[in-house]
Image (cartoon, rainbow, N blue to C red; front, side, top):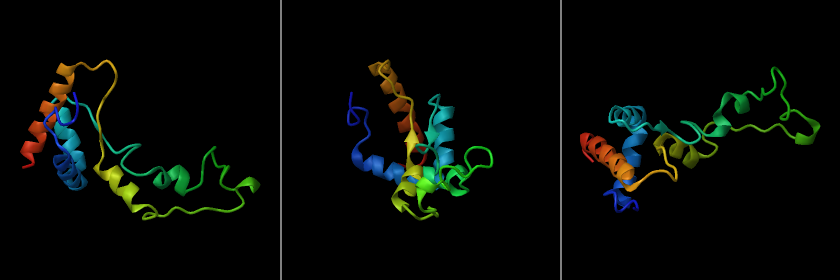
Length: 123
């Protein structure tokens, strides 16, 4: 079963992405209420370079390694806005459970939950 077969086409996916950007947490919460566990963002709601371990350059306790090691040669800074498309993707990406054990009926149940939630948002 492909994404077209689930009743969600590419245009709808783009519209869902725009809506999720505004209401991501509520969208994920609504999917969970329908029994579909999901998470906002991949690898999370912000890109890796905005996580505190990277921004504050603190890794091993109070160590700044590898950021301040001689091999690094330069202190790097990755402020918000470094990669706006990645930041947007993290806000608009909903991660769904997916593995080789899913059968067509599981995919249909997932699609049904997505249809119900997107309909509630007027999509």
